[in-house]
Image 1 (cartoon, rainbow, N blue to C red):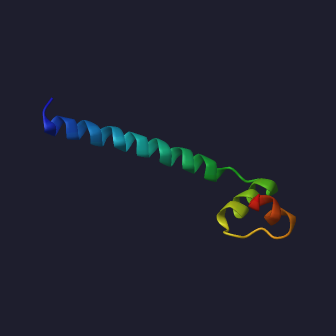
Image 2 (spheres, one colour; image 1 turned 180 degrees about the horizontal axis):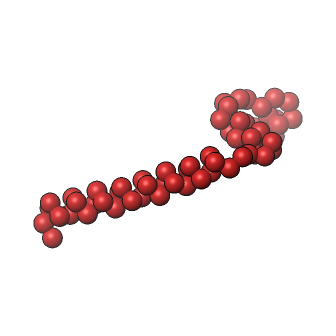
Length: 60
């Protein structure tokens, strides 16, 4: 297989993978989140330091 053919093939597969990833992201975003899912997502996205017992537990 020539380099040119190999590059075409690699690019084609990568495009398919990206397309599948975009589809799965769109599918997840189209669903409505429950209140608990939204809270969990918000907690993941914020960079907060736990206080009190949670912080003490994390240090161990």
